[in-house]
Image (cartoon, rainbow, N blue to C red; front, side):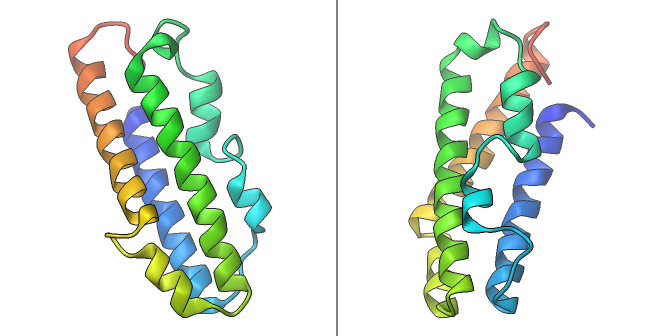
Length: 125
């Protein structure tokens, strides 16, 4: 499995873990941990696994921006869940919410990246 496919998988696992935290009202991670964009597999890969040339592209910048938004919104949702505000957290997770929209946009950008990597030799997969 290539790096972009793994990034997509990890992204959806983060969403699933967040939904579990809403149901349980607890998490092994704090909102501060979740807000950090450099601790997840995608963040680490974006910081160290992408070629310097590809870091100069608009697609890379767009993915980084969406990834940051995803983490900030996820941290907010986790804070709601941990403070007993599960219904508000569920609302924030909906597809038409800011989080849902940014999450979907991140998935789409990663799919575009994957398509670009298959068409362009030397592009990080």
